[in-house]
Picture 1 (cartoon, rainbow, N blue to C red):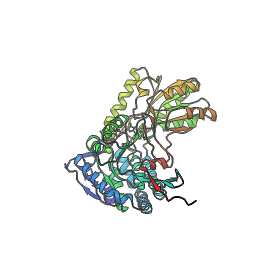
Picture 2 (picture 1 turned 90 degrees about the horizontal axis):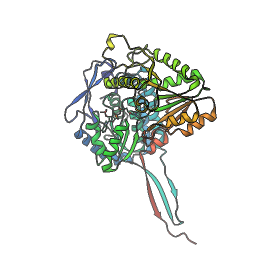
Picture 3 (picture 1 turned 60 degrees about the horizontal axis):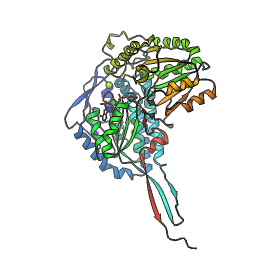
Length: 498
Ligand code: NAP
Ligand code: MG
């Protein structure tokens, strides 16, 4: 299917679009013939009937990726670069349409979706650049030998992605894997499959050979599970919850696959009294409310120095009340729905859990009144005060617009509280004292640390977790390395003449 036709069909919102899987360079129905609905979470309306893959389709996709692997792995870096750059150009050409698809399917603000699509285009260009710069090392253990440490693609990679930044988080697996010479099977989240279909159409249009990129839409256990256990898959790169991540580690152990695990978080923000107050309120509000709090690195626990605690609660409560909830494509909307009814119920449940444990709702936003949105999965932003770090609301990942505020008195106490979690994905610190900022930055056990900012993950940087937030790294050079093996080639040389 042509990229433009696919986009037009989805954003036309007739709901009668029927999509297919992309296997071995061809669009095909699922072997079972089954489909499931992709829905607009703001209205509950169907956007498309989506092909529902299972083990039979996974087998076909893995076989195609395996057949394509040798040729793609020895394709010149220059050719791989050209194709990824052409894909970047196509993403830019279709920016508005792809952003609308993403906003509709995931309940995002259009501006947020546009920012994601711009970053997707950048990532394709960025990793295209790496395709010609993959190099190894040489050394000699003795004068009559040479060791070449060469880099080779890992092989067939199964890429399993979540729903919160559907295309961006899928693409940051796809682009480095293709640049490295791997062939891939992408399994996007069942809640948000549509933008991955657009990526498949773009890669096809950019001239990628058959079998190098394959797409299985469907549910985790039926479409993703068979990939994870498949003997012909060399690597699994997974972004999602810690719970499913642990399951995947166990399931993949039988065939001992290379794994990259980007998992959950309960990221702390530490606010000192000497912070630039207005910038800190802007940044911490972004940290919890961006994308309705459905961000793995959302600053969901805010530790505030006692002397400014009440002022911070008041300012963030006013912020929560200031959002206009609505459809992401309505320009007056400043917060969209959460991704599904299930997710809305989960957030609402945690508000009850928190208040039952003694927390207070200090601030609350307003639900949309438009009758068009009455079946939408909206949850108003909530500020909780009086939270203790041991409460469930401060320990469990919620993934919604719900902020827990906790007081502290000393930097050491704040660090101890910040580290008192099973997660270690990201953290932020707000202060104008460079020494205090670095003390916190070096003491908090997290893969990303933001000083006077939040949610920064530039694609040329690095992202990944400590502790139960996972292992392996995405983005930047380290993200490319996840798709490469080292091979040692030892050469025996003739005796050096005396
Ligand atoms: P999820 O439920 O863990 O699902 C993630 C992906 O795994 C989906 O494609 C899902 O398919 C698939 N899956 C589920 N069960 C599976 C199985 N048995 N075998 C193979 N695949 C399976 O996560 P989510 O709810 O989509 O996303 C939210 C979570 O992702 C949060 O915990 C968040 O912190 C985490 N996340 C982490 C990062 C990071 O970089 N560290 C970034 C974003 C999100 P279905 O679509 O059918 O469920
Ligand atoms: Mg959807």
